[in-house]
Amino acid sequence: MRERLESLLLVLAVGSTVAIGAKRVGIPYNVALVLVGLLLVVVDVLPNTPMDPEVILIAFLPVLVFEGALFADADSLRAASRPILALAVPGVLISLLGTAAVATLVLDLPFAAALLLGAVLSITDTVSVLLAFRSVHVPHRLAAIMEGESLFNDGTALVLVVLASRVLASGTFDAVETFRGLSMAVAGGAVLGGAFGAVGTALLRRTPDHLTAILASIVIVFATALVTERLHASPVIAVVVVGVVIGKAARRHLEPSRVLALEGFWETGGFGLNVLLFLLVGMQIHAEMLVREAASIGLALIALHAGRAVAVYGCFGVLRAVTREVVPLRWQHVMLVGNIKGALSMAAVLSLPHDMPYRDRLVTIVFGVTFVTLVVQALPFARLLKFLGVATPSADPTLDAAKATLIAARRGQSELDDLLASGLLSRKEHAERRAAFQRRVIAAEAALQSPRGEEVRDHLTDVALLTAQKAAVLDAARRGLIDSETADAHANEIDREMVKLSAHEGGG
Image (cartoon, rainbow, N blue to C red):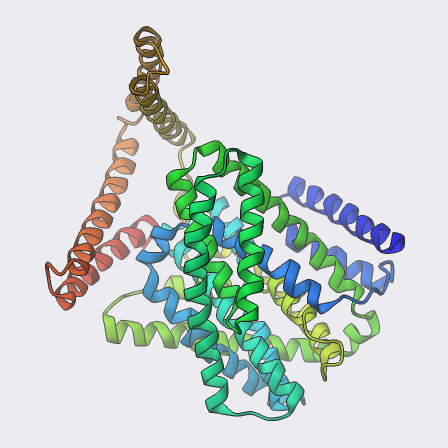
């Protein structure tokens, strides 16, 4: 036990050092971790420690998935629901089958093992992509599609990993039974996730402080995963739904300090597990096996991108023909190149039982593919966004500071009004403090009166108005005031206007 604890502390120490160095030189920390992990494998520094697959399934995956879902913007995901679902359901299946078909032909793997490899490589990891988005700024809708696809893609792909591993272990494949299992897992996970999300929201709203809120969120996450697993539904999809529901409810009903405490805790947990996974994978493989499988890794990369290309361009082509919803071609190029593997793919392959046929080879190939995609695709991704004309112009620091000041001051005034209404603040103190905030508001508004400030405000106003109109139309349909087909037609027209705005903001 002592030796395991020392090994764990060594891994965390190495990972923390690497992450700090990566931050200082301005590269994504997961890229730096996989580079160091490979180096430590080659020089044989890390101990070859077997990982218990149950630990990955029970402890790692729920935290990684919930952390990503908690930060998601539920309203943005709903607005981009059609492109997200197109990629997360048929897109994953197409990508899996395309990757498996090529892998069967060129990697000398039986089709069941190739299916499992395709399922693992269908999982996307958007850490590097979202870091690049924050550094260069992209249209909000593009970021929402890629973030939402990652969340729900993870759930679908991990269900397929479980089904494919059963096929490989048993040696038999029943298409009807597999489809039934997939449908039950996805639907059951979504329903149970919604139920646990409602319970978790009610529980969080009754917690008296930050610590009890964090503890309650931990209990909800692991209870969701364990109960859903017991009921043979998808714990990953359930945890994704819980994360989105709780994240939205927390930002709406809890005070900001508690929301920040929750997000800070889960962000730290997700970062720690990313560090562990990237280095622990290095403990599972041997350098000579990595060299021996180099050709297989290269061929797997070709298979992966071929399947992804068919999924992205095919699904969005069908979506445009059926619903007239347009996803700009440049965005589709971004989604193809942004098909980067990361912690979840490695967690999925490590969760396979040790006696699973071809396990060692699959672990090595997935690690190699993750390494190449992070280094070759993630590192230059920000420059690619600029090359494709997707990145928006850099924000004006003066305007950004003015907007931040205006938002903060308005929120402060609102809070002062609430304190006065509740009798917790005297009228004199309220007037003095509100006047101080008003001076900040006036200064910020003056900065926003410039031509560039007017342009920014006009764009934000257009987006807000279109979003409000779409919400009103869809709400009227839900209440039975207008026909659903009429509402869908109007919503599609509004979506087209929003795409035009986003394309204009992103440089065409």
